[in-house]
Image (cartoon, rainbow, N blue to C red; front, side, top):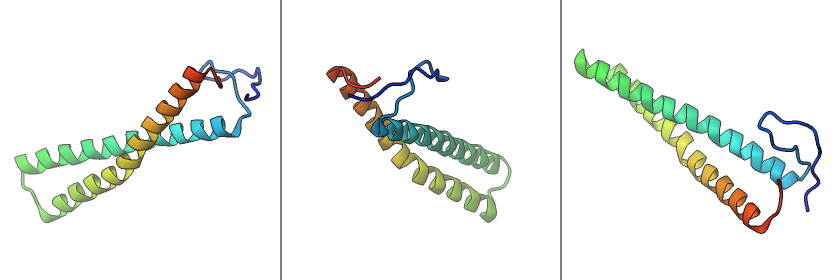
Length: 100
């Protein structure tokens, strides 16, 4: 059973000293950040594509679009998987009555 401290947290959950739960929260924060950046890069790529389509689609613009899509994909793929894994682990803990 994890040890729970009474120190307040920003998200109204008790702080825990269980290293597994601490690491899970770190992974969740990293996944959220990677998703934000990845989706933002996809958005930039879409906007740049339509700007280039409306004006002139140059080689440099295409290169930037491809880089945005590539980096966005590299960030999003593991972030989505990690996000689902964290949610599944939290759900399993809740069903077992363990943790938070």
